[in-house]
View 1 (cartoon, rainbow, N blue to C red):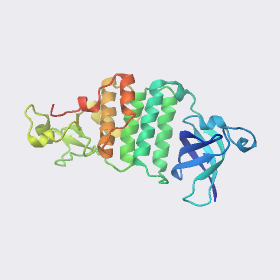
View 2: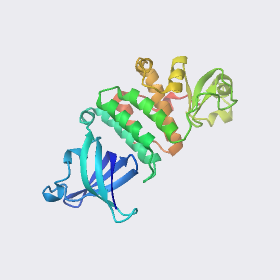
View 3: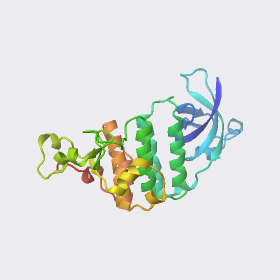
View 4: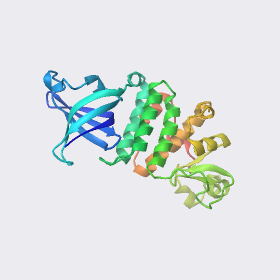
Length: 272
């Protein structure tokens, strides 16, 4: 069987002496792996391969063949459709792209297509390649990813009482906003035993940040937010992913370190 598809290059690993094992996220086939035979040796075997297309976070048009759906595919052709050479030369942008990539591996099953997530990744990597602020790009991208994967991110009513007034907190454990009244037991100086179990998963929102959470759009208002507010949005998205996956993302720590950000645990409302 043969097929072709638009795909994003995620990872490449040397295979034996002359080949590469490539990992893609494709529009119609989701996460998949393909073997590029002989591409490291050059010559006739690699004549239909654009090796530059395999080097980074580009969108490519790939051709594959495999004996069956379960068999490892062989890459037969690849060419760059949308290059992103600059992304690889910015340390913060590269780490941001790796955060997105790790989240994709964590929450997407192999062979599970999701065109919406594919378009989200293309948008995020385009922004990073265009020298947009990595913290801002990740803040929106993580929130959209949580929502696209069906894990929540509701901002229309309180998760506790269903009310629509005083929505000033966001619960990463529930993926939904919380009103002042329902959040009060968890943010008062003397916490109950139940509140202590909430852990660092409840985040305070100002009026402007709450509006951003509702829209999740790359608007002038969002771009003009302070770095502190963008950091809050990033931490909320990361806390949602950590709660869902039960373990931290490995790429989060180096990204925070290069930007000088605190961890999600030191920033969120907690019992400490």
